Each structure stands twice: as structure tokens, then as C-alpha cells.
Amino acid sequence: MVGKVEIDQACGVYNDIWTKFIALCFKESVETVYRKAMATPKVAEFAQLVLLGESGKQRFLELSRLDKGVIVSANFPNVIQESPSQIARWAKESIAAIAKLPSNTGDLRPNLLSKNPLIVWGAAVFDGIIQQDEVPAAANFISSKFGRLSEHPNLGTFTLQAGAIKDAHEFWCSADVAARDRFQELCIAAGVVLDANFLLSRYRK
Image (cartoon, rainbow, N blue to C red; front, side, top):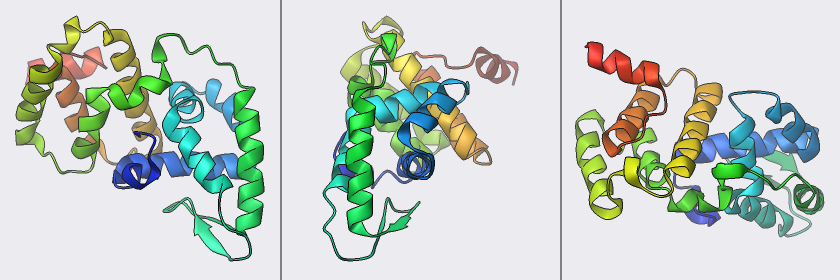
């Protein structure tokens, strides 16, 4: 998520979603996956985050540098079982393909992903490090460092990015509703509403 693979891989849920997407790119090609993703509401903005942001670029760069001659399982946990030379060749071709994709992402701004406190703290929420009763404290910490996010100059970007992560999690990890709910609770407590219906459901309780 921050553009350093060794750190990103420590964020279990994020890494699982990222590597599923990259494995799909290996199977079908970057261009095909991007085209299909842009026509799929729950994946479109996430595809832009992966392919046009630094974290995704770093992952492809790492794959392009694999040593030759040894069979490896790359892209763990959603492994690509091919020779390092084939993976590296594909990754280099993918990097070239990504450079030709439309770069206008509006307020999504993928290169600011690692600056989004909802994404950074969201990793701990999704992985279960921060539990339900600890969400308010995490939100208070975010507010102490960034101010109320509803008043932040990057509110639009933070909201779009967090929404893209939520939607991608729902698309690929649909059964883990509890983690997704915790993430939305964190966003609301920090001043960002991703789903008005979710907010209303909490008020009705």
C-alpha cells in the first residue's frame, strides 16, 4: 500500500486483494483486466489504485526483477507459478502497458494512497489488529494528527480511496462483513461517510 513491497505484504487483507488482482492481470493481461474493471462498479476505482498508484507499480517492478533460472511462487499468497524469466518478461510488458493507460483519475489520485490515514489505519482494522471497541481510539488518533477529516482539503480523495478499498474488499472478500463494518465505523468516527445506508443503520440501533 505504501509502495514498499516488504511492508505492503505485512498488511494481510490488502496484500490478498492486491495479489488477486495482479494474478488476474497475469492470466488475462493488464489491458484486458483494466477494461473489464472499468465496466465493473465494485472494481473500477480499485483497478486505478493498483495500476496507476505507486504500490502497484512497485509490485510489478519487483516481479520484473526476479532472478532467472529458478522456479518460484511469486505474488504470494495468490501465486504465479511460472519461471522467473517468464514472470519478469510479463511484468516488464505490463509496466509498459500500464504507462499507456489513461492517467486522468480525477480526485482519486492513486499516488496519495499512502498519505490517506483511513487506508493506513484501515489495514490494522481489516487485519483485526484493531477491534470494534478500539475503533474510536484509532479515529481520535487520526483526528489528533490530521484534524477532522470532514474538513480536510483532501476529503474528496480520502473518501474515494477508502470507498474503493471497501468495494474491492466486498468484491473479493464478501464473507468478511465484520471487518468491512469495522472499517466503515473507523471512517465515520474520523468524519468520512462511505455509505449513507450504513450510517443510517447505525443510528437506528
